[in-house]
Image (cartoon, rainbow, N blue to C red; front, side, top):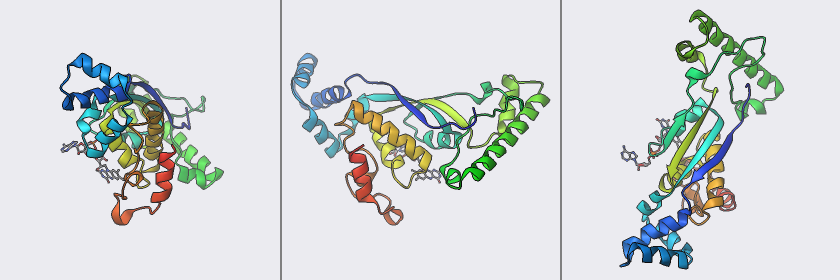
Length: 245
Ligand SMILES: Cc1cc2nc3c(=O)[nH]c(=O)nc-3n(C[C@H](O)[C@H](O)[C@H](O)COP(=O)(O)OP(=O)(O)OC[C@H]3O[C@@H](n4cnc5c(N)ncnc54)[C@H](O)[C@@H]3O)c2cc1C
């Protein structure tokens, strides 16, 4: 364990998401039965139609496809932020099953080193690592007092673990929620760790459904900045970054 870094993997997604969404939308407008609808959608490129749906905001149709990601090497601080997104589904590794490491092993629980600390140089990183080792000793001390590592002991010993301790989870979002999540969390105003995760999730989504995610990212990718006075002032740079992602 010790220092960990972000790892995100697109585990599964709705098969042919753009086709499914085109079918859902065509059903609303066409006087055709289901078999005809499927044939029509498969026979013709749906790019223009899908972009039209996004433009007019017919967004219930894009709820028919979802994406599931596996995420690890992220902090509990990130977990607190991402789980505020109520329309996403989560399964999170329990800290009750994370065991104690002895000092002889020289290991600690997993943690994220903030970039601001790395930017201060090696001495600062070492200081941070030593603080994590101290916390591991506190954790081990409580485990010992509770009679050794087991579910019940870990449950309360974990109260001394920091926000920087790592976690892993699986998250599923439909495309409507993903676009909303990207608009908030790919923005320069979002905290750096969740911004990195959101940007990588968007890159993976674009590989599968480039039309649906064409204009995805912070609001400034397709329109004015949503942050008003707090704008980072880098709209042109952000637009280029996300359109080329
Ligand atoms: C830069 C930044 C800073 C932040 N700082 C703070 C902070 O200091 N403190 C803090 O507490 N939070 C903070 N947040 C979290 C923020 O307030 C939201 O809780 C979080 O971004 C989830 O957004 P959401 O509610 O739009 O998304 P979701 O929960 O994913 O919901 C998606 C959309 O569904 C609709 N919706 C969902 N639930 C309801 C409901 N019950 N009623 C009506 N409509 C609903 C809304 O339209 C919503 O936008 C911050 C977020 C960002 C991006």
